[in-house]
Amino acid sequence: MSLLKHFQDSVHAQEDFIRKHPAVSVAIFPSFLPAPLVDKIIEHETKPYVQEGEQAGYARASDVYEKKLLEQADRFLKQTQLYEKERDAYEALLDEYEAEIQKLTEKVNRTEIENRYLQELLLRERQLLKISR
Image 1 (tube, rainbow, N blue to C red):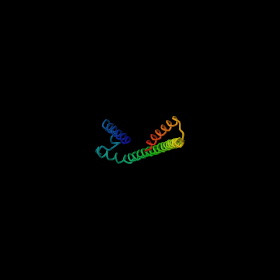
Image 2 (image 1 turned 180 degrees about the vertical axis):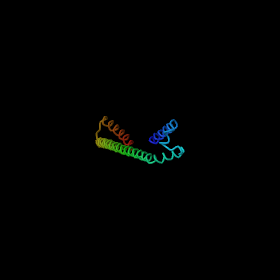
Image 3 (image 1 turned 90 degrees about the horizontal axis):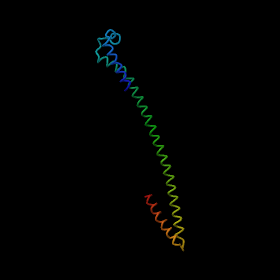
Image 4 (image 1 turned 135 degrees about the vertical axis):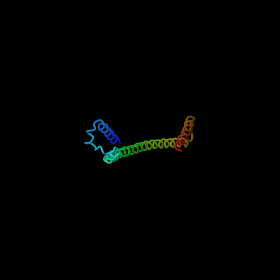
């Protein structure tokens, strides 16, 4: 659109010039052509260039959109990989808790310290399991 605006400004500058220098006006546009007709001629001549500019702008906007869409997918895939690593670490932690709880539960003669430790493990395991729900 700026090309059209620039062109229209140029036409208005020509019209001003023609008004100030009527002798030259015949060389540019015959004086018998009314201004609306001149405007139509100019519009007809500039329309393909305006359309070309619009198409180029649309193509640029499409390229930007496609690039952003691909970058968004890449960010999502990175986040997915991070999530999978954290999930694996979480599951490994739960496995360790289960193994330690199993070992202490099967022990026949636990000390008071081992009983408190087992209670802490059970409490934390429940809290960790709540996260996954």
